[in-house]
Length: 306
Length: 219
Image (cartoon, rainbow over the protein chains, first blue to last red):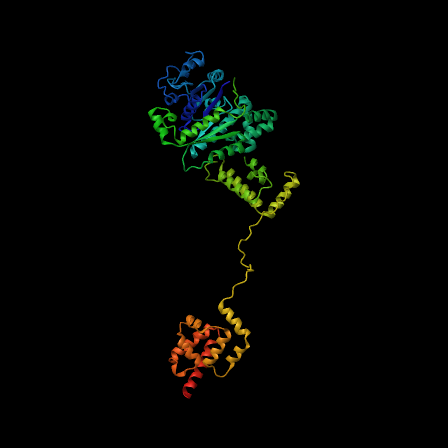
């Protein structure tokens, strides 16, 4: 079974695609058969990062049923062991993926036969992003040490929490639940899934128990990207602490990735940063991250929606 | 959220063990502040303003309670009564620093006596010297007697006082005609007396000068 790593993070420009491409390269260079899937629907550019400027097929062909199996939408990249399902050349309305399409995609992804699958997700907290993020229990959040990014991370985590609770109820029941929560905690409760969770536990103890166990099984990771020298290196750990303490999510701080102007240069030259600047601190950080993904602690990878 | 934090006991709030030492409490409080402070990047947008204020107030209360030994003891007893924590083992009082340098310490080593002190001791031990000094007239001969009793060589006095030996000899022999002018003589006598630690130098000198003046008249 493949290890699936969705890479998300509320804010655009925090380096999700760069990180996906770089980690993909690290994994591939260690002999893992790695697949990158660009699910930043409507704003795909992962193909540009891994030197496939004109992918001849991609995810949209699968959606349009030009290709029956997702496996056939895979294109090779110049790098050995590294494969891509591109999001390029898709319909302009692809960003609004219908529910059935989404389920179909998730099922198809879980059936792919690779060692590692990295899913590059878009910014924002749309249902598509949330659901794809929860396709596996090992989502990677990417944030930068800036208030804007951190704000969006919390937003994303809460949205996922919310979505997960929602998953256990049908529309009418959920509406009822929300009303109860509003009654109990006042107007702030609608944006606080942790309060909603308390209501769940009170009204439906069994569901609350199941939900808690479900959420317990998630083991998210946080990567802090673009960490400048003057930034506090402990911020990532502290963010994880806040999330763990106040939301009850398991979230592991995977590490900092240093900021480097050369990343910009490498992207502009459309070459691999790791090959072009292998002896930078940033490259080292990326390799370290890749190593962690190669030897995940224990059995933590499980695909939902199979 | 607010009820989550307020449900915790102070130790849980600061994320420390009940047996934590004081510096650990301080550390934990600092770490918590770094996370929950209003300007902290970490918890930015995570809490509403009221929540943050409440949390910070609780943290401060926890810190102030635990950092004070008495109020901590009271709080601990409360928790023990509720069965929240087990009896806290009394830690042994940490070693307090030991002064390396004790300002009151007396040295046992025998202090080497200075030559002056030695002389003074000799003067006080020797009653004859007191007798000599108590005479009406003090002459150079009296000084010579005292010097001999103290066993100080004339050359040594000359070295210390920088007065020439022949001058000193003239003084001791009472060669009135050979003495220098009074101004110089006074100075010589005073340094001579100081060198032998004879006191009070000024008074002795004055009496000597009187004697010399009388001798001059006689001559």
